Image 1 (tube, rainbow, N blue to C red):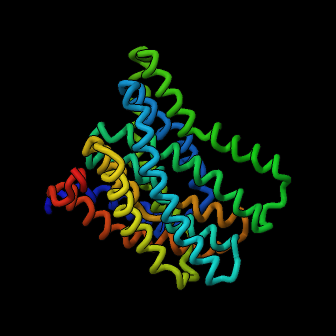
Image 2 (cartoon, rainbow, N blue to C red):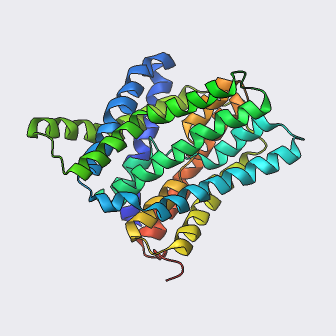
Length: 320
């Protein structure tokens, strides 16, 4: 257990450090803008490109793995969405945000750092694939459901064009595509460029986690949603369990790939859920509370999940 504590302590310690300093120094949230820009547009894309570019191309087309991990996320979203629509008597907009809070994990800021730290560089490919295809799903679901609810006022063609633009031009997805192309062409960047990418990649996890802690501190906890318990259970417990069963049922994958997918499924609600809620003016304060509280609960649940993985208590295939 001591090695698990040694693994998660620096990881969650960076989040706590960002949270604590934000409370002490009292900078406005706008001061975080350039660090977020660095993480999203530079550091994490460099990490994805560097790791994918050296991966054999045949490992980048595991469509059954992609289907299993992404479909399990969609099921979790659907369970909360349908239940919320029924109990709210047809409120599609808030039900969409609740569904995202239950299914959209922090796979961008927390995912790469934790998976690579816990499972090694072999986890880079499944992490990148899950990130790309899950974000494509989330980028499409949010505007589509908001359009159905009437919260999205733009014409359908403009909505569709916006979805495609967000997907195609997202820095992580561009970096992943460049890494896949480099792997296919066996391209190796010149040594100075490779070193530059390595410096950027090393900064990705610390900066992302620190920025996440600051962001959580600067969003005050005002309204705790009464749906918090089912959201937390779906996101932190049922999502990784369903992903594990789904991947075990579909096929025989590398243990690192299965564990990476399960670990990402067990991450807390993504800060992007708050951003989407704010964009449409729906369920904003409770979305912020969901992000903060599931992150707090994840200290225990992610630690427990890592213990099951590292101790061998969780076999890589439930149906060998």
